[in-house]
Image (cartoon, rainbow, N blue to C red; front, side):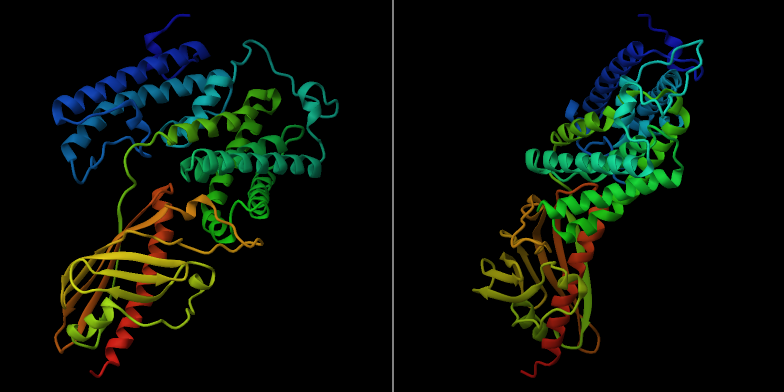
Length: 463
């Protein structure tokens, strides 16, 4: 095996599997030690090998363009040459295997880069100076004989195997690794779409519409199986559906591209990619370091009453009327009443929800301006809709946790009060930005329910 340094900057040509893997190992080692040296010498920051897998983008805690522009710019400058070399090597390797060159874009995508690297490591080189002969679907020779030729049979097999992949991934991620992360919510739907489209096109060319249709049907079948087997409830499946469907479509498009470019020489190794990529994602994701980000939701409302009157109903309030919002009717936990034991700092407030009480020791008692508290106990965030009496998936325990809250009362001209409620929380579900949309929306609606009730009580309080 011979390494050619020109492979690191020339776009043309091909590269075999062994030198590609060796170059990848060498470049990773150089990049890691260079990052570690720069961070330690210039910024006195520690950097471990596992830090590359701690977040979707491998930047140290707090290192963002807005907070640390100089440090961020230096590390970005170091990364650019490695990015160039990585894309060049991927293009050469894709050309060597006959896979679509467009796959090189996955080199910079956090989840799909696993898929790309495994494909480049598994798929052998094309035989040079020979024209591949298309397989004859009618003969069913070799490994092709295991795949149905009919549209219905092929689609059924694709859906069944893809759904089985999703079930296995769910058990592996949630039960063994105890995590709801990029692998289960992004990697699994992508692999399902890819595998479904690939299987469906094994014996016969399919249109893009057919590839996407079988991928979406696979996601629907997997969701139904998770519900029927009591792994998940309807609410969480509905929340995850938009992300899963979009990524399944992307996976189907990639699988369709493989069909278009490689149907004449379908490699069995391609079918192994999802089976290898997902466990690798789960295993590396379980090594993620550091706590999840602390998120904040603030909601405000004007109350036509002075702060002293509002304060009494912030500290504790009687039972709220039954909720009319669709969100809470679907099973999301909602506040019922608030009780307090004692006064001042050290008092303990209990905000009782439909699934149990939040325990909130008071940390700041600045009457009638600020009530601030920590949260030492969280009830379940929802009551799942399910055909069974009791389904309790792991994400109901510790994956959406309130850490701190406060009520801020600001006097307004004319005797009114600006009432502001804030919750600090974190969740252990990734992609964080996607799930934050849901969690912020839920907490904001909880705030509105409480603030509106306090507003009604304060404005009707004649004492």
